[in-house]
Image (cartoon, rainbow, N blue to C red; front, side, top):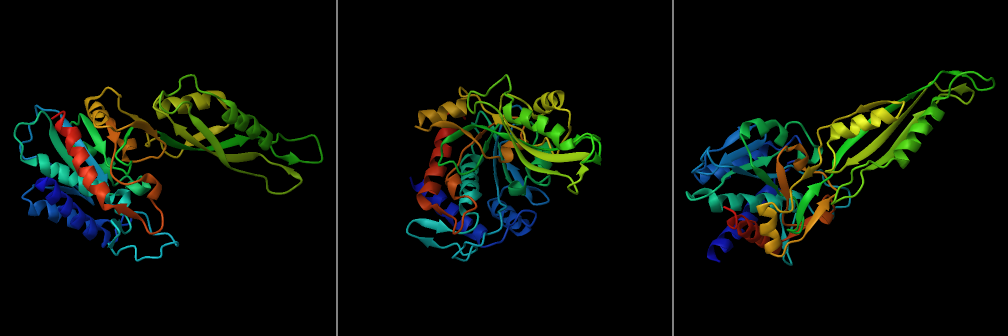
Amino acid sequence: MTDLNARYAEAVSLLQQLISIPSFSREEGKTADLLERFLKDKGIETHRKMNNIWAWNRYFDPAKPTILLNSHHDTVKPNSGYTRDPFEAKIEDGKLYGLGSNDAGGCLVSLIQVFLHFYDRDDLKYNFCLATTAEEEISGVNGLESIIPDLGKLDFGIVGEPTLMQLAIAEKGLMVLDCVAHGKSGHAAREEGINAIYKAMEDIEWFRAYRFPKESEVFGPIKMSVTIINAGSQHNVVPATCTFTVDVRVTDAYRNEEVLQIIREHVSSDVKPRSIRLKPSKIEKDHPIVQAGIALGRTTYGSPTTSDQSLLDIQSLKVGPGDSARSHTADEFIYLDEIREGIDLYIQMLEKIV
């Protein structure tokens, strides 16, 4: 218990320091400096690329599989509803307030303490790689994605996001599609032209009604929503083009590339994805780390929100202290007890497999 108390106290102190430093996405240099200095002061060799800091356990063995411990230190910008200073890390009534306290500072400092707990062990079945990363809130290319080649072979990952320490064993991917229906312009008063709006309507109806053959055990069917449409310039001209945007939430039943191919086979509009980077993710329910969590009374579920899991090509579990419902809200906070529980449960889960 003394060890847990010390780790909890150090985690809270580090989180207060992180909160006090603005670290908006793409502007995380100073929090990266803090994290780098914190680990180096522990005698840990660190590596840095842009605003991403990573390290391996002392007795790293390339013959052993490696567990990734990842969370992010960037934040969104505070919204207009704040009544507190978002950078004042104040403790009141068992809560630590401040921007990034819940998303995902509590997860980050807890995972750092977990890494420190296992750092000096020479009897582990696994290696540990700690990655504290940037640009998660904007799914930026200079965050976790930029250092994956530097991390070496990874067996599976734990991604720290606020889940009330329940086990998110799957996460939806995201594709945003820009579509263009093509017609032929003409005068609206005469029987001429091909109305692109009508062609778009046929495709939009397909997006509304189509059901993919395979469905996720966790999420059910893929969800496609047409969210923006634009066409026409004046009332008496048949429009030659109609553009529309589709939000596609991809489940673990498909890869993004497969979904895109199926869509293109069924619609006449040109379909261009803004990105296929944000992949759906999944970890099998019988995976040892999931079973370890279940044995500790944790429940499993599928997460509708995206995280850095979407950038990983390995099985990963999203789990962490804090509540996703508090993320990006005014006067953000995390309960201190959640941080203590987070450190304790992370360690207990991992002790069952390492």
